[in-house]
Length: 142
Image 1 (spheres, rainbow, N blue to C red):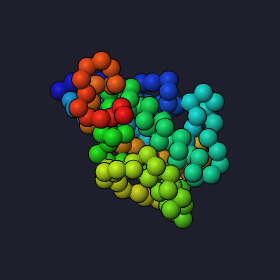
Image 2: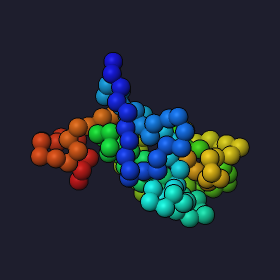
Image 3: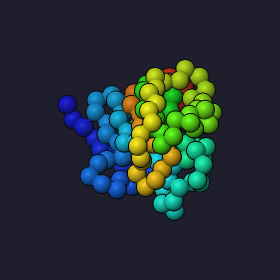
C-alpha cells in the first residue's frame, strides 16, 4: 500500500517531524490542527470559540488538499486544555458537522502546543471529485 503525504499552505505548516496529513488507500489521516491562522502563524483569538473555528478551517484545508472534505470525516479526536470549555467548543464544532456528524472522542490534556486551547485531528474517507468537472455523487461540494 502506498501512502501520500498531504501538504498545503492553507493550513499551518508542520512544526516538527510530521506531516499535515497522510492519505493511505482510501483514508486520510490528519495531524492535529490548532487554531492558528496560516498567514500570521498566530492564534485566531484567545478564546475557545475562535480557536475551534480556526482549527476546523485548518482541518478542512488539509482534507481538501488530500482529496476529501468535512462531509467525509468518519472520526475526530478533540483535545482540550480545559474540559470546562467543552460546551463552547461543541457549539462551534456543531456548525461544521450539522448533519450525520462523525464519531468523536474528546479529552482534556495537560497542555497543547504553543499554549493552544484546542487541537482537532480527523480520519476521513477519500473523495476525488474535489468539485471538478467529473460527476460527483458524494455531495461534498454543495
